[in-house]
Length: 315
Length: 315
Image (cartoon, rainbow over all chains, first blue to last red; front, side, top):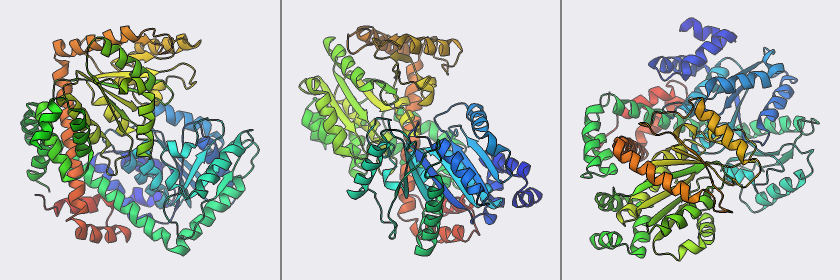
């Protein structure tokens, strides 16, 4: 493991991939891997990109990666597609899609396509980010579909959150539908070469004007940017704004607040996973008896849960 | 509380609404309400209807409710819209939409639109189903968007699971996108009066032929039905199939298996909620210290979680 960590920190691609596979596993080996890598992480700027399906996130991520590369920054990308039950498919799809980037040693792309049997998708995603971080990537982009609590949690675990909307999806303000309006640090309207892009921009600006942008951001005014992967419009500007937001996070002290929130979320999720394991392992006999009582309705689920916790032998 | 339970069991609508509000609350009063109602539930046939946005679920639920009513069955409906951050809106929308049914004493409609601050949406939904069950509704339909783990969990907590697809959404097999292909007991292609409906039906049947329908169902062959809320086509047939599936669940013993799985899921979710409360309450001081160590990277999140659990005072 020591050698593997050293190889990851040195940026060895094979070691990075191997470490990611270890970290993603729900095996105890996964814990050991994170444990070994975690002290080496903590420097990367983590950017979450989210939006409804069809908003053009993937293409935008690709354009952004190319743009950041032209500024000599090393870029890690984690694509999360929890809606796909087929692991291999999404990975292959991404490899094809990201073709030109896949040849670049300054870019590392990882897809997480499975639903993570035990709700471990958010955990696996953040562990993967840590591996990229430890391997010295300056920026790590997490691309996720912002629908459902798991997905919003994943997007919310980034330092800078970019919410992507596209014109013509005909669904009103998509960011609201996806439940991600309030977490956006930067709004992007992709495909701005399309005719109805201006309407989407106007809607988002109106939303901002209504004060619906959610939490206070220490003086950061959430911008609405227009981009086009087709014409390249707005991509360089978006790069600038993302980096400016990174600086703002540092200078305002907001970065520390976010790091704290993310760490807390990770601890709580890990604790829940661990408790579930205990309950499904040693706690099994107890669980069977409680289940029988719940089925004959002498206990309700809350009462059964309470008794399960009381009887929990931890450690 | 005793009087309230008696009123719910007698079918008093005001008591039902009151009990639901109690049960949905995360207050201890919510636990007391479920506790009082739970022994009276367990008779209703619970039907989950899910599909991507735009698949016509809501209209189908409405048509089905009318059809079941014409067979003198009492119908409860729980609409779950976790993508809406606005509670009131969705409820008003449903009231308008369900207009004709809202006048019918044999129908009770409840909307759960909030994201449930603490991941409690699945719990709130199933507690609401229990209230309708205890109040003597023969059938309870849960309508949900099947995207995201929470939503799939909710759909999966029904006895019979109907997955709705619509032609012309241009997204390949929508049930795969939504992560609900494998949980379907019955596939419905809505809006079958549309030109491209046949293609959707063919795709789904091909999928079934490939053995992608997931788990064994004790000899139940997952049918693909075509419906049109416009022309009424297929609605009566769908009613028949849903009821036949209910009989199949009973006669094959599969109902007991599902009830067991649902009860187990509810106990585990309730235990997790409870543990989170404990951790965010009494465990707070411990948490602060672990968080500081995680932030300076002397502990990783898994190690912090382990220590949090060790120090947990339960009960």
